[in-house]
Image 1 (cartoon, rainbow, N blue to C red):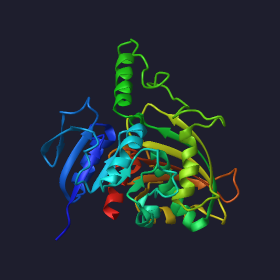
Image 2 (cartoon, rainbow, N blue to C red):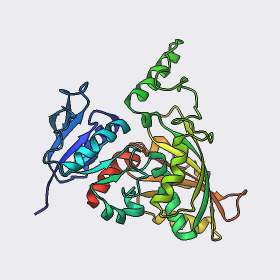
Image 3 (cartoon, rainbow, N blue to C red):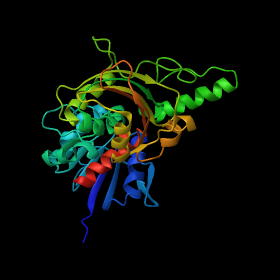
Image 4 (cartoon, rainbow, N blue to C red):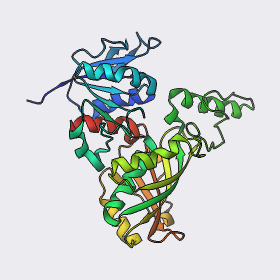
Length: 332
């Protein structure tokens, strides 16, 4: 008989939390009991799970009694405060924040890449950054074949990566522009509608942002490749859902487009969509709501030795967050 689990979802009313509930349901995860947790502002609201309303409870010290697996998707401050509590109560935590990702004793896992690392957990497993996850779905299979040395990339990140308020802000600004009026920027420092912002996360002394450094730092850990280097510019674009990344990668071995396409076409969780003459290439509109990421525009990089350029798109609420977390739970 299949074992069933007591599950808690922290941040159940947020964009990722809502997606987590949907993914658990459609993948038929063996949930015996589900506890929806959020801040006091959301307590008393109801979320749907398996066609039943679940009352949202306020997150507190006693929220994890008898919980087997706790999904955290409520931001770094909440994770920092309550993840230790959940672990003490015996729950295995799958955390979507960046707080614990680089801790040496915390596995940072993309199941298609380093699923075996789940075995090393001590009650806590970290979900990677959404842009890193989408990009590595294409970079890693190429690395296995040709040995990646370094990457230059630019991301095109949807507003849903900033949560439900950012989605509403873009919607309001688009509607306001159609009526020839202004809608002020609140989530972002500038209007996002009809604009692009080369600014995701806080700036560091190096001039890079924290988001931009995650692909290198997390990529090293996930791929077990300490010498991996990535120079990234992260850009917020007026897209509701799904991130895209333009990648130029340099490899140790000589690579051809035909070999690369063959490798990418066989990679788990990835679809090769690469017929530019037919206007077929990955796009956010096409991958929104899809589990698999898509890769295309594969070509030899004219500026790098043993280099490939390609374009990858993926739903950052799914592979970049909720789906990846549930896949980790399935491995457990």
